Image 1 (cartoon, rainbow, N blue to C red):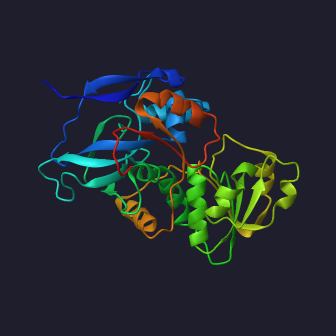
Image 2: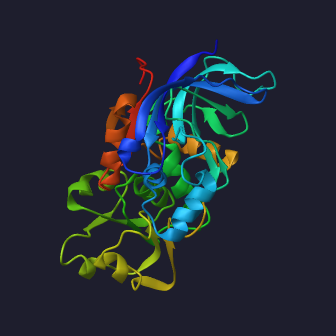
Image 3: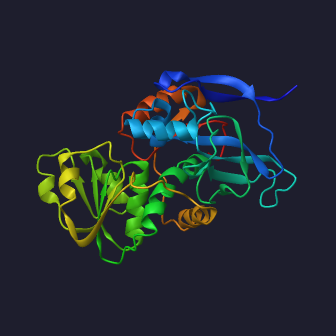
Length: 320
């Protein structure tokens, strides 16, 4: 008789209510895989988009091309996790039982592993999987891969130089907060765009200035920037966002998180881990839900006002 586990099943695309807690077979690692007992995962903006298919036609088509038409091929969603190795396949050499790890199931648009909305998940050892940074707990570790992975992908090729001006639109989300820290680490003068209630947060993570996009005088506060990074994507806009495109220097670049299909290599993932251990980037957790509250977590993220990451606690652990 097969062992079972609890998992959140997405039976079809639709509102948060399509997510339900069920008992399913516990996965068994293949020869090159690691079986991870999951302590924490996170609900990302991408998760909400994929579950709801609330996007223009071309995006809906691409999502279903990746995930399955009509309903997800893998009904267990979730792409990020932290936890402890419970077992390894016979060919695995980089990990052993009881290792504390964190991971992302997304390496590129067509190299995806879903399944972290569950008590256990298997990943190949050569995936974006690494020993958890020693200076963060499991919840913080689960909050790192999504935002840091996306921000790192766009920032690593920007070539930001000391003293350049960077504007980050949507600076208080999980991607924006990581982008703010990466820009500051590169020596930039960083202007964060977010709501006024999040000014203290973005400034605590390195923003030199902040603009409230909801205020009538927000456009007048724009300066001239070498880089503008849109961390929320093209489906959300404001008058400030529209006008910011005119605030670029002569050789300036405007980059949206929707511009390309991002990828994260194993090497990139290890570089992100090193930045965390060096204290150069920190995770920000907005709120924590239980696995049973997954639908409520999706409803909250869907509102678009989270600060940093929304984490879901799976197995309890004293060091979380």
